[in-house]
Image 1: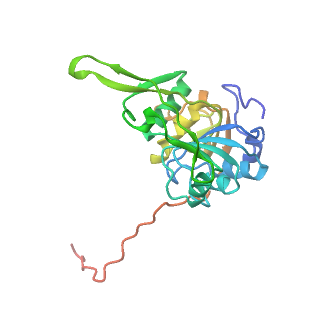
Image 2: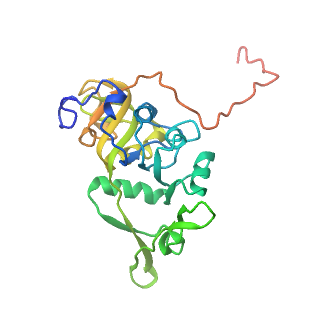
Image 3: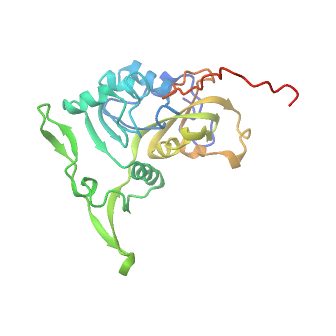
Length: 272
């Protein structure tokens, strides 16, 4: 992977398997995607194939039973998830309630800012999200003991008042997140790692990329440096260390397919 970690050099690697080859057991990962949009499935499947286990994963959600991070979960490769949404994955529920999986449930906006702060070098921040709840007070189950009891609960967090008079309000301290690696999917990228994301796939992917000390991006379209207008770059290449070209025909899942039945009587618009 010549130049793969040096800014200004060609960061393209030959395959997803090569890109994730140095991710060890027990590594922490920030993974992009929003629902089933923008899941870096080629990198996830390569990680599955190489057998890496004991992973601590930070992502908005954990995919579904047979897609996205769900494939790693099904193979019991994930030891801990930090997420804001955990629905629509029966295996996730089973592993969590049986005590096989640790979960740090985090408000969605807080999770986004924790990732961004980690990438920006900010150690912690205060937010109003979670004040007056178990997010701040502690006691949220993080891991069960397999018999219905709580083995690990979330700790209480510092709460401080800011402002004066009627503007005074309580805020809870949240620590930033940085991880060993980040895995993201982008619509377009150049050889220097500048990335463009597609619509809602942009929600968490740039933030996850920033939080990883080594960021690996799979891209549908690979272009030469200078071919992406700087004004359209969503994530600059300084945050990206490896780029894998996966092509535009890579499988994409639709979370809920909604179609409109054709009308039984089509009006005659001839001459309109």
